[in-house]
Image 1: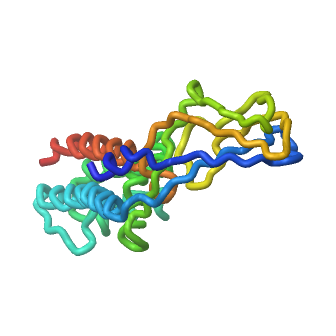
Image 2: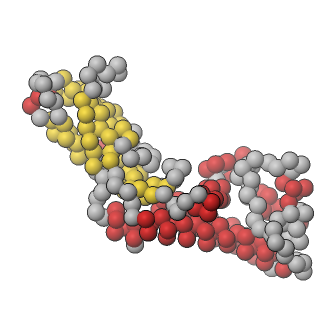
Image 3: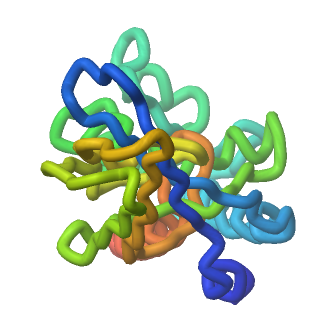
Amino acid sequence: MEAGRFLDTNPYRFVGKFKRNAKDGYNYVFRVRFPPAPPRIGVLIGDVVHNLRSSLDHLVYQLVLANGRRPHDNTGFPIFLKCPPGGFRKHTVNDKLRGVDRRAAAEIGRLQPYRRRNGGRRNLIYTLHDLWNADKHRDVARTQASIGMLDVTNVRFKPNADAGESDGWKAHPMGAFKDNAPVVWLRIKPAGPNPHVEMDGPASLDIALEGGYLALPTLHSATMYVTSQIKTFERFF
């Protein structure tokens, strides 16, 4: 709700500037500008991230108890972007997964981001871990408004008399754009000393996090993924 109220204010704007002698011929560049998102949004995002990441550690704690063993101070859900020395099982059976049923430990191993099929840095568990570490060790989640997607089918240009004719354009329609990022390049044939073009570019808005993550879809996907994965461990209880 907090993010929705902020995004409903339509906080972005496009700022265009004429570039003389552009090598690629696209001599008018539009950048997108965003105000900072309210700090409270970062606090709430950090709370969601922490709860999701903690749920994985709680899962391992309960798996140890279900196996008739006693959890210890380092009991938790390991997350590796690279295979640990000696392999996953050797590294974890006497550490975070000590006391976990070997079949459940193997299941946790199969979820590791370093396994090629799991997507590496794009793995949702790794994304969650990355955001959690940033929030825990560095700062409250840094946020800003962001364009999730620019609707290139509905972009409209409004040139003044000095801008002359336009002759083609290109855009980056997908992804999270940082504040002041170039998003559209336009070719114009100036007819006067002060060429200026206004652009209207309907866009889907989101909150961007450090690392280029789009907050709302990322948190939603991570919630669904973690929930579904925890369900696969029910057979061990």
